[in-house]
Image (cartoon, rainbow over all chains, first blue to last red; front, top):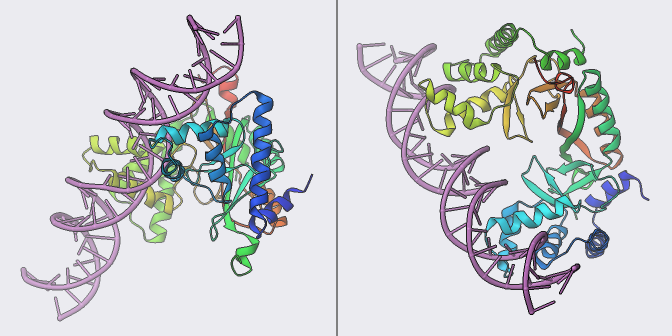
Amino acid sequence: MPESSDHIAATFAPHDHQECARRALDEAAARLAEQGARLTPVRRRTLEILLESHRALGAYEVLDRLAAEGFGRQPPVAYRALEFLVGHGLVHRLQRLNAFTACLHPGDDHHPAFLICRSCDKVAEAAGVPIRDALSEIAGKGGFRVERATIEAVGLCATCAAGGPA
Amino acid sequence: MPESSDHIAATFAPHDHQECARRALDEAAARLAEQGARLTPVRRRTLEILLESHRALGAYEVLDRLAAEGFGRQPPVAYRALEFLVGHGLVHRLQRLNAFTACLHPGDDHHPAFLICRSCDKVAEAAGVPIRDALSEIAGKGGFRVERATIEAVGLCATCAAGGPA
DNA sequence: CATGAAGCGTTATCTTATTACATCCGGGTT
DNA sequence: AACCCGGATGTAATAAGATAACGCTTCATG
């Protein structure tokens, strides 16, 4: 399995995105089949839409796309599909952005830290464990038991720092 | 200066809250005076409202309070006061909750991690530096430079874990 | 093939946040 | 005092994000 830092670089660098999205979709389908959950047309399409870029999309952006393709045009349509995907670890919700992004390697570390590039808007997942450990340790000294944590960083990716994406 | 873990315990444990709020307000006033910024009535009252508990309040909760006391009753009234206070480091915005909480020790570490108790809803600030360092290191390996980070944990505070607050 | 749960669609509504513009107030200047 | 200015305050209107409640359809299962 690749290092987390490879995932980060791979997300921001130009790459064969067709391939990258296809892999993620296949993995998602496989995982859902295992769990006996149904990847219905709306759900599949929602995931595909998120997989088309590494950006995070708002629920209404997703909804517009779905509506344009013949699915329902009311908010619950998008929210339900997104909620399902989030629940199955295939999509992440970004609190800072009120937006959603496809998970690129479901199953690895399901509670990553997110790196959001303010220039290209792409979102990468970074290993969350060491950060969560640091947080839990500090919290624990004050008697607080951490159950879930949101870790989201805004900054500049290597590609943009080097003068913008190709 | 006390350890961060003391701040955490102090926030969740029963304590002389009058005193605690008064101190924070005094510090806030002093800091603003230094910066030549004006602590107007709405702003002062907004800060006081947030200081009345260690909970995070939504903008509309604050607005209701302000309106009931004779201030304007339109959203911008609350949002402007909150924005001002956040800008001067006297109030923090919690992304997870879409809510605001008073800063108890402005100036110390202005970018804390937040610990939100899911039982009593109180919010404590924990030392953010070590966590941010861990995050920056991981991100840096992937070529990402972190500029701002949101670190918010939900869990159970010591007081609630021990059977609920007094 | 009956049936009950899950899924999808709708309408309506709620919460959160911002834009745009009018008015007011305090300080410094003429 | 009259003037002007910028910041602060107020309003109305609307955008953006999210959920509740309800009915019809689909589908796996007995």
